[in-house]
Length: 271
Length: 224
Image (cartoon, rainbow over all chains, first blue to last red; front, side):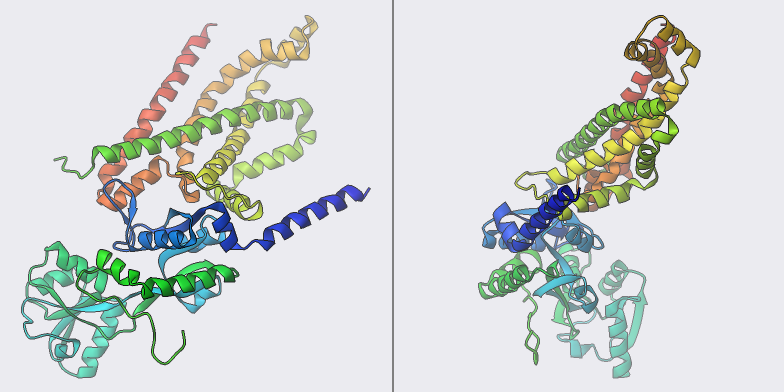
């Protein structure tokens, strides 16, 4: 008898067809909850407060997104390598997790337009009174954590200038200690790390003077690759966050009260 | 010496994690044991050839790492079955999947223990009981079961304690149990050794009574 098998196949087919019609955006709205993957060991983007509740730029961003959709936000903690598997296995709907928009990843997941960019700051130490911009570092003694992106970049600039010295250090804390003790004139580190170190008060005499003219690390929201409806919504949402000033507001709340957030547009290209 | 940033709040947070560990373990051991007894007796009763399909399935659960089983089962219910349980402050889907997978995992091991226990009852004793006029069910419950339980108990206690520790793997599908809550605190407070000691103490507090209860039962049943 083939009839029961056929009926079963038909039932399965109908079930899948029904599932295929509603897309992720519909699912999120009808379920009333948006599940965001957020990395919570990455302050100021994501961390936990004294009550072990998730806080940070990314957590607020997820809550804004949920509010825009008219649903409740549910923060699902993931690690950096777990973000994409969590998305693929249906544990989360979107990842608001400082994901760099690489072409390699775009083969697997769908990216929105960048919602944040990690820039690098020039941090001057106690002995570099006259340094007011990146160009002033010419001929000075600079240093950074050996092997990092910013260290390689800085060493190249020193070679290009043909004057001054580059000193590699074992870790970030050593760099800031050297800066504070006057062994170094300046360093380059991400704005977030620089702000946190200045705020901590552990390194006397250091100050942020300028942004380094490096290509920022653009990060975007991610969802499943085929969810065009969702990606479209995310793009517009990022646009609205900047337009309404919420982007600046969140930057001032979590990253730096005095600084300016990165420009999310690139000259000479549409997107 | 004990200069720590750990607060009362954090201890409550850990205790909640320990609660989840206990609940997941209790559910898994409860259903795992029921299934394990059914599967074990069935496998003994029908013989190795007829039980081969079941043995194969149970071997799958025993030989694939639990971590992989959990991830695959969770992906199956969320993507293929399309489960989307939301609106709770805790991860319902993850919890159900964790309990389901752990129950089957426990059942796979438990069926071996039960089979071993039943096989340890001398066949002649069972035949004697049957020839006295006891039915299969009567013989099973009043002769085989009491003797098999005594043989199987130490392994079963060991299995329960093992499942409790294996339940720490359910963090991978987003269930915040004891070990995961400890990791959360380690990330925030940066005191890994101290926090792992606290976590170990919690595990000990949960496991020790179970181990002692097993020892007590063993002693009590020795001269019955």
